[in-house]
Length: 122
View (cartoon, rainbow, N blue to C red):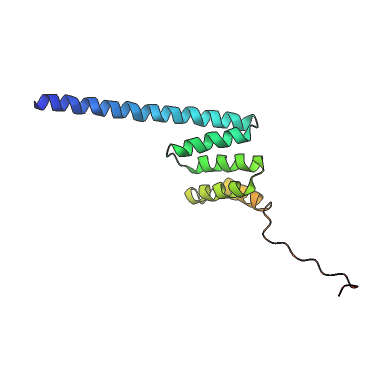
């Protein structure tokens, strides 16, 4: 009876290991696909692929940085900034993240100043 349980545990451990490795392989394939889409300027599709990677529970500064770049290229500066900030939390000393964050912030309008009234209305 003890040997049966030992073999069962080894079998279950093997299955878990195989599932974990295959999950990493699929994430790697998805990563390469997302990067290829970005390279071919298909930014919306790249965004979807990067978001799918996040959906698997993977998280890294590089992933958020690339997602921020895709949003930036797609013209969605708010989501670009959000993802650059997430990347910065994971890699606070990365100069590329800081540079891209500054670039994206230039496109955000934080306030509109009222123009002075013409002399004839004052």
